[in-house]
Length: 220
Image (cartoon, rainbow, N blue to C red):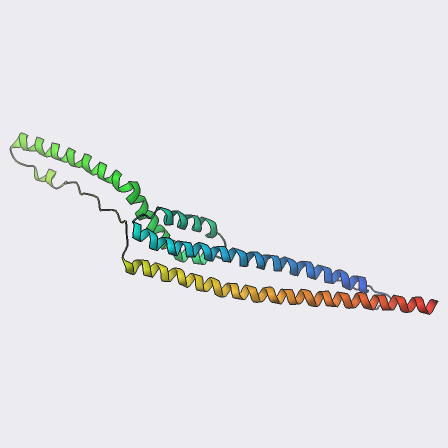
């Protein structure tokens, strides 16, 4: 803010002060809106995490991780690139990846692997039979290439694993709650600053009105 100079003075008019106050209030209102938006987003973030925590327990009971897998992937897509939540998402990435990989394998990967296993086993048995016919003995090299049956899909986890994941989520919820408390304190401070600015502006307006009245009365 530049002062109005007159004969080397530093006089600042009430109008200039009011303009400065208006600029400051606009800046603070912007900060206030951002803080309120962050608090609202953090509330949705906590709700989503609680839904995932409940979903893990339900999925483990029903042996169907399709819903909670979708919730986890949507959670990562929604918050993973947000600087305010990226650290939490990074910490939960291992859980999301493990559940997603195991669910994908259980839902269709295992069936595909079993189909290939049956094809490989049939081919192996045919080659083994052909080797036996041609030499009268089973070829030892062929026997070393016995197809391995794919591992069974994981459709549930131990209680300890689910409890560990739940505790990890609880830890992130606690951090989010503490951060939201700090945000609410910041919002209160911003509101107090706005109120002070409004009071100061009102004081200047009142002072200006009194000055104008005094001048008019003196002229009269």
